[in-house]
Amino acid sequence: MKFTNENILLASLMGSKVVEQIPRFEAVQNEISKHVLPPLRFLPILNQPVKVGYPNYRVENNGDELWRNDDSISEGNQFFPFSFRSSKDENWWLLPWEPMINISGGNTIVKRNIAKAGKNLIGSIKERWSTNDYEITITGAFYGDKMLGKSSQTYPRYEMEKLRDYLLTAEAIEVLCEPLQILNINKIVIESVSFPFTKGENVQAFEIKALSDFPYNLIYKRKRGTLTVGDADGNFER
Image (cartoon, rainbow, N blue to C red; front, side, top):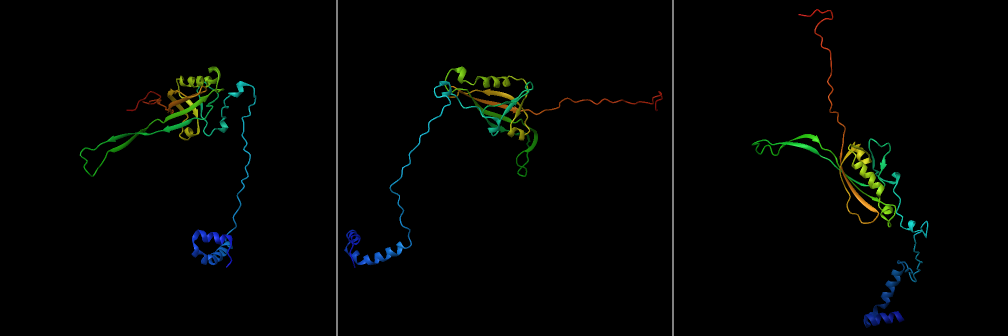
């Protein structure tokens, strides 16, 4: 047996008796090396240069362009666009940014209890009386043209005035939105609007609570007919 540096190092670490097992270890190691792939080199690591991107402003030296806000989202790029229209408007008014819409509905149930029903009749008798209005909550936000600056430049004044006009409309308002169309809701009545405090000079959140409005024909037209009591010649039947 030929001693090598590896054999001597292994014997010093594991004891003198391991010298007798060195030929067997070498045979096992040689057999394993036939079925194991050689190790892959991972050093030295090739570091790639890190590129840091900087904003590319359209006008670098213009302060107005520096704090300009993002443009509103077009109707084609919104998932569920929401539009208003009153009876006086010819065109729809699209909310510039897509809102969140919550819809809830229910039925009015009349319950009748049976006196002394006993164990054979448990509970009450339910009678479906009518279907309630859909309660609609529209939550969103308006954004001004600039993020910093004077209030006339940052605050979304035009959108707030437009929403105020719909709030003061004393009639049902036409709406156009896919979730509402599925429920056959084409008109709503605004019940309340809240404008909570919003962080940011150019941001104003809003929440609209509305009810669905379906047309009803409550006017009963009485049918008018001619009562015949005799012949045209004046002779009456007896």
